[in-house]
Length: 503
Ligand code: ADP
Ligand code: MG
Ligand code: ZN
Image (cartoon, rainbow, N blue to C red; front, side):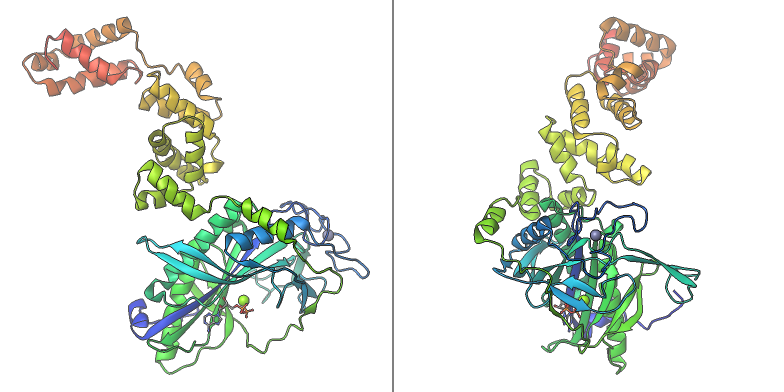
């Protein structure tokens, strides 16, 4: 960025000011069709191929509510400990923007489907911080503009813009927190932990993949400062569309430092939206947004009110999965690992693959070892997520079974995994094709041992003379000769036996 912004150090900012945050998270639901019409939501289709009169806002078209959209909203509301409205309506949020063909967004205003909840998030030091939820409401996404001809891809400097309405009408749930107070210096950490936990919750409900890198989940970070010890909120800035966990944390941190610089030099914060910049973690001014902004909301006359039956809500509540934090704590105890190790597994996206591998019959420690070791390394190298690797939990479990049966040692197991990842087939097929079995045939082993002794007389003499530690070199020679396919412990036994030394 060329814009330089005055900042004070994070420590100095916190010495004088207390941050208050508000997080607005948009989640794109994974429904097959759009929120108010039957158009497909599949990504990657040709521009404007997934549109109809309703999502193009043509006169005379009528919307119909997607039942799965409502069901997903209720599930999210319940998982966030919200009350579910007995009766609520959609509202028109009126404004003009080219990527919104109806000239209004169908949203919810003063009657959200879910309200007054909370989400407990665990911080790095293990402390649990409760974030209160104001509301979760249903709305629709806009289309997508592509500004062509400028240097930045922004509208400024562009010669023309292209519009794709495939995304117009895809269901969104917006989840808004109450002002988050009392986080102090941990405000950026709380913001990140909240979005991370929310994402886990959404994924566990199976209502969205909630991938931030794909824009399926994005966060607006509202932040204000007030002098330490005071109650009244300061003026907030709203950093829009932050799209990674790390960026949420950085945006909050940057805004704390920027607000503090403005306030401590006697300036005033303007209520505005801001853009976050990944490259240097800064934010720059967007549009001024005062509270008088008027969208002329009014109830949507073309849609019936949503009045979810209590029996349905209770049925959905009863069907909720174990919540991620509870599940994590349960697994942490079952596996006997530390908070820190659990966090690493979570960050690596390894918990679900590990559980699936255990379910497929692998011992827990082995499942953890492979997913957090060899497979994490591979995923890293390929720039993939663990669940995108071309190996299944069942295949990993099979490898651990071959190791347990003594058919493979760790070194061979790594080669088997490498083969599976390279598309050579199931573990057994890779073992077969690559000829990767532990050499347990005593005759073959004895021959290899004798050969190693014959070729390394000096070392053999040392061992005979009592330097048992020197046996390592001979074991190495045998392993090399058998291309790693011997059981190293048995090789050592044989060497000592041959040389007439006690192990
Ligand atoms: P808008 O529609 O302008 O984005 P909302 O009320 O929907 O406003 O959301 C604002 C978010 O910011 C909410 O999470 C709210 O709790 C939070 N918030 C409101 N006032 C402040 C403030 N002064 N400082 C920090 N956060 C605030
Ligand atoms: Mg907002
Ligand atoms: Zn449509």
